Image 1 (tube, helix red, strand yellow):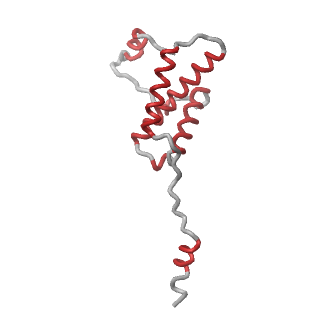
Image 2 (cartoon, one colour; image 1 turned 90 degrees about the vertical axis):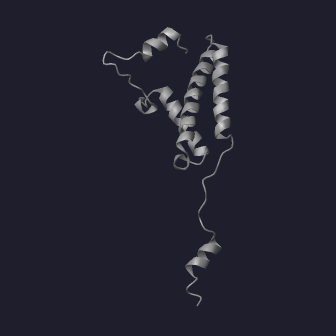
Length: 132
């Protein structure tokens, strides 16, 4: 799960042309299990916070990070449950990072703002001119 310093350096070294290509979640093949987990969690979190159109770019960035951490945690937990060894310190660090980001976002579900008028308000507006 974790990369050591040599692997990170090798991956971040610019290619022959001197350019570093940055990948984003948009670059992922959405058919993989890992990508599906990330996107489903991301969409669920955004919906719980009032929907993507109602969220700032900053909150959307936090949501992406929470979703990625969630996929990593689910993978580590599944490995553990299958009897494979995991790095408990890394698992706890990921859990802590995700918890802090979730706390920053807010742990309570937020409803979309309901702009539907009440029947009384609708009738008053609709028939206001008919009364005179």
